[in-house]
Amino acid sequence: MAPHPAAAPPGHPWLGPPIDARPLFAPEHTALIATLRALAPADWAREAVPGWSVRDVAAHLLGDCYGRLARHRDGHREGPGFAPGEDLAAYIHRSNQEWVDAHARVSPAALSDTLELVGGQVARLFEGTDPAAPSLGVSWAGVDPAPMWLDSARELTEYWTHRQQIRHATGQGTDPDPRPLALVLDTFLRALPHTLRETTAPVGTQVQIHVTGPAGGIWTATATTAEGNWSLAEPPTGSPAALLRLDAETAWRLCVRGIEPADALTCARTEGDRGLAQAACRIVSIIR
Image (cartoon, rainbow, N blue to C red; front, side, top):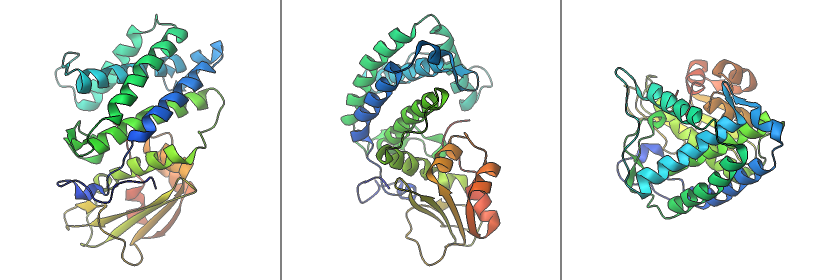
């Protein structure tokens, strides 16, 4: 697992130890720009995610960067609001699509140039943040406001995941560098207590996810009340009630729904209570 400080900030101990994503923003940005610069002209039109081309994903990343600078550096609060009856997921998907559509006239070269400039500013912004400060909510972890360490780690996973989608669309595999993948997995697995929130079990029951490989680790969620509250802060005690063992590729793709839980379970090894393992496999670390 990625290195992190020893103790969680007050108020969020159930999230587990903080993650320090700050040193990885600059190298992740460099890797993204290198990936974009190496694309052939035809690559930009390839489908990266359903309905979006590589160029669309690059435009979306640019929107993320501008949004982060506007909110956290410049204190700018204007922009699209919620439509009547719209929930958070629908609002985000709509506003993202509007941004991508508005940038259809922007060329791949111009997108790369602008991302190189603006993304570098975002990396510097995150490098100067206070990990314990309150920040944007992380809905898939069930916390709002979230501590900055979780918000920034979540943002790093966004950039990393979209870079992998671009790589996959253009015939490349997942970046094998274990350091960013370890941080991505550690961040994604912070969704486990929220995932289990409707799963009741005796206090002290433990559900464990073991991700194999050099970027992997072990995450243990412990039932702290009989009503569905779970925590990543409790140490493992003996054998867990359920163990879900996944390889790193399956784990990160599951968390962003590049693979469905039923398919992930066919690749997994489970021990103990099958129902608890299946509940853990419903983990999702994006807004859907």
